Length: 147
Image (cartoon, rainbow, N blue to C red; front, side, top):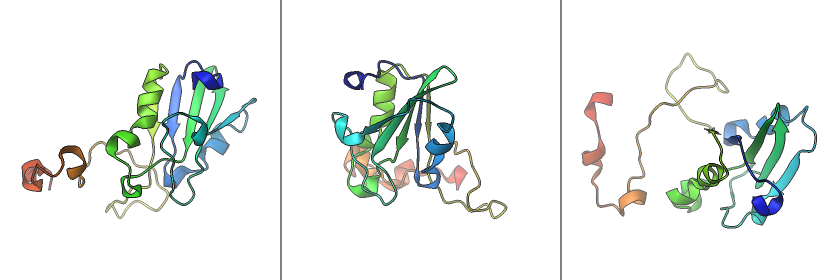
């Protein structure tokens, strides 16, 4: 990113499938929005999911140097967990103090409608094999207290 003229980031937002046009609203009053192809960022994994634009937007909003990852990668695309964390790693390296990631998550709360925002505070990992090569049986990570 430094090679592209961005020396520091204050706010980094990763758009998930549910909010892929968030950047158009965030940057509507910003001037000098820089569009960076993810292909131009060394080692950046490229999203292949439908609707993910493979670009990073950069602008200064209210004095905050902000990037929006307009698309993200998924485990089912064949990427490892460390690849999925690339935006977080790069943002931290660039001095980012606030990192927000979004996604389209399913839920069973019937009082919520499609498009409602929800704060996810925990999850059950169903992909533990990605972390330890399948050495940990699911029964060892399951907590019946949260079932």
